[in-house]
Figure 1: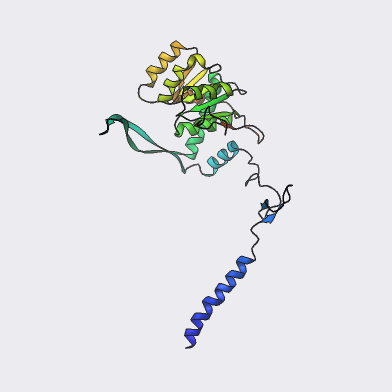
Figure 2: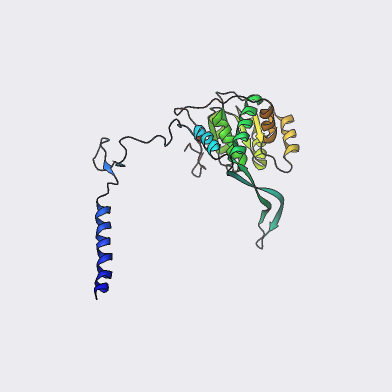
Length: 269
């Protein structure tokens, strides 16, 4: 009987204790920010907004460099390389492209940091000025991330554009931001060529390697006044001609991000 009562009382006492503990927690405190009171609260542990969790780290570029130093040998970027592509036709007559991909190939934090430094140096050697903006018009991939961090390392504002945008939206995005360098993939490169006469500020196009791109790129370079280079070539140029970082500060603009433009021309998000 005593064990029976003990088995009932212990869970009951424990529940009451936990209830009192929870009710005593201060999860948020009211903050006077003007206007109607009661709508703004803050974490009870902090008296002002938290700008960074690490001393001396105030930008994405700083955070990336610190992460690469701390986790140099750990995996960061995984890529499945394209083996082949084929077009299949469904029963209703619609065709779609089917990709055959290999196993994952990994870049460690340390290797990614080296790739970023090489790309940043190569970009400047290619002629991109520090005060100019650059655009990434490509599907997300390892090169997308490396380019982004490379631009940050040079304190270059990046314009990100959906790879699915149509001609009018693409033209608007590049002209409005006055981007001078564009990173793109194979299918995006074709879109850029069709718009070459309407792009006012583009001077350099860096394409991510894919089947058939080199021949297309040489044709583009002959038919436009753009400097056209592969992503690998830019990295090689930077490896041979390293340039020191020009890191941004927290007040610099990192990214100008465009929406998909589903209700008209794309807008800055």
